[in-house]
Image (cartoon, rainbow, N blue to C red; front, side):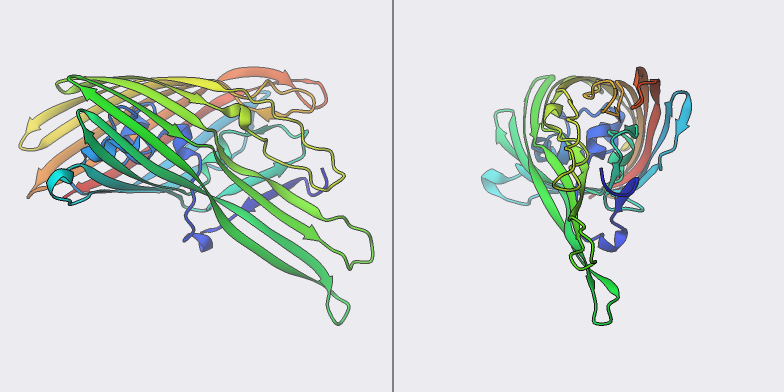
Length: 406
């Protein structure tokens, strides 16, 4: 690969008006309830988490709700027992749920939701490395993206609810032209554009008695960056350089889930099928004559999830909610070897959460805290030179939100 040893693309908050989405939801779930319950919610979501978990659940909302919060993510990843240094992620969370005030047959049947996950220091980050450089490709950089999503939920009746929405992801395209000015000095002209790609989210829920079931489809979402550098007037033959790759990627996926609710307790079981086999890899050839990057060889995965929630009412509108969950995320990546240095691991994820709520003058106020610990199963392979290599570690995700319902 031609070019520097490391080229990083970082879009700063100067472009914060752009609407983008990325992969924090795919890693952790979206919203305090989903994050505390192992990324579930497809069968029971009825708050801001529904914009990702299942838009159909928005139709259960009866009050307007505004949520703000903060989340942080850290990594303790190792390779050959030595620490790999990655920047932690920090982000603000915003959400809005708004029932639509129709009358007649549409009364209490439609609601819209918006959700935002906004890192404090970047819009989206992509990294290009030499193929022989080992790199954890599916964890650290995936939390460095702004996430935006919107959805509509409809109560059809007879226990059936449906919903639809979209997720959007930023991509960068542009060019750098190096030329000579009138004095013979080299100068450059830069023309870059921040564009967006979109994908749909479609879901349905059905309930009968104590049981709820749900299914959701999320399309593939890919953020590419591509900047072509050309220098036709330098006096030496320099081919156009295509600095390009994939900054963020969410595979197409289907999540199916069932929930049993009795009194103040909800138990959830679900499974997510992810089409990782369509992952194109993080980089492309730099010039027309450069060798194509090695096929990442990713495989489709199946992610089982389980969670439980219990609510304790203290009277007069005061309540506490305890949440816990677990999911197992198998790695889609083959073990690293000569020519393929994409590091990834099977992950055991343990989740916890606590919500405290109260009512005052017709409004409801709540504070929700959540946490996740991801334990990476140690994996072995070989480095680019054929020497043995071992990698693993842990990751954590913590956050707190406050919600006002009115």
